[in-house]
Image 1 (tube, rainbow over the protein chains, first blue to last red):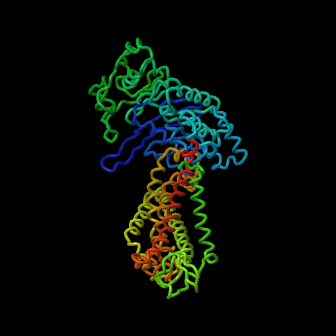
Image 2 (cartoon, each protein chain N blue to C red; image 1 turned 180 degrees about the horizontal axis):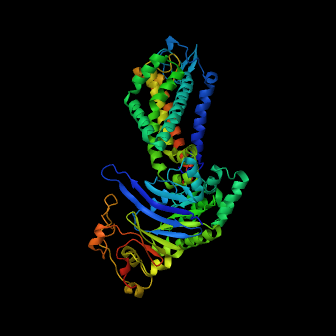
Image 3 (cartoon, chains in turn orange, yellow; image 1 turned 120 degrees about the vertical axis):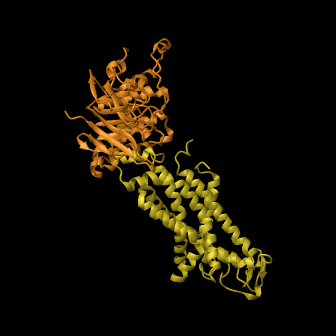
Length: 321
Length: 278
């Protein structure tokens, strides 16, 4: 069975006015199967947002191949790109700026259907009403403007718009990080529900490991434009193989103070290097507590360890959890 | 100003309606022929009565024409110049600004350099050139004002478009499959209309004054036909002895510019759904 999304060696470089280009994404490979949720995690600036923008053609890839439902994104003409965007829709981070303040939410949700000539007039209104109901809002909300809704409700509206075309793949870019903690759980549960009822695949981009654990089947970890570990959720959270993954997990706070005190501390030294001048060898060696001379010289190859795929020379030496 | 329909805005609309009404009906409501000179009754103050010619409520000008009739008749020229030239420059300036801001690249470079060039040419010089080539007429007056003023709107529209075009809801419209014309008209234009409205309403008054300057140079409304600007510029020679010639058209101009500015503020808020129901 073909995967809904296949990313193969994706490279995105942004030309800089002075000096070398910014290597935002440097050789990322993964797939997302039907109905699967893949979490894409990493700290700010690691390139996870650029990956999702490249998938729908909002930025042009420099190299590699992206296929959405079999259609190549790289070099796609306008019509193909439009086709791809019917299959893969995005939910952006900030619901406050994701909606046109001068447009009623009914018009916003109906826009994909209207501009593609899929529905109009009465039928359009009915489909918008159905979408609103589906995301937990009321059909009569359609005539209101975005400012009349709370942040959580706005994100529901954004989700409804993304669902309008019945996409096979939903890209969620930090969909709850701009929301109050009190409404995050509601929105996440809505995602899980909708994903099942629509039989969608989902790429869930987030820096929040607790959120990713709640919704994802598999998790991919990025660092400085590189994918460093890709594993099924339970394997990643119980036996992280890459030292960076371990550091990330150690940084997730535990609600129980006793557990929190018992957690291993893996503080990282220094700052994330500039993506315009990434380190030689393993990109993580400058901050890695386990780095050896070999790490500075050779880029680690992808290796399978059980269900995990990891790029680290010393992945076998994982300390016992 | 919250965009609600208040007694204040009703008064503004009412006053503007009176202005338009007077301008349109000018030929029928003027007490005297605005062009008829009575040289024996030159520079008479307001409320002058002459047994032979009747009342001159606002006095007479330097060649003995009834000032009230000239102000009423001049309203037509002044309001038309203001409204038409603002429309021409607003429309063309916004279109250029939108296109430059959306497509960026060489289109933006070309458009914005033309803007710089036009702004660097003195408006009076351009007006003299245009009239010298095309001859003085009302249509050429509008053309001159449109030609010299559109860059102001282009600059505002360009800067605003650049800013709005980066927002996620524009990405979302692209994801929806909307084409450029729809994105420009439905998503960007409504969100940059506020600042453009403010520019347009301030320009409206400026255009009436600009026309006065051109008329003074003999390039605008041709004498003996009146406009507020030309009445005032004729009157400035007598401002010490015959204040009424500058004051009354000035009050009319002040009133209409104030009304248009207040109406512009109100419209800007009215068009912004966020300002209502809050």
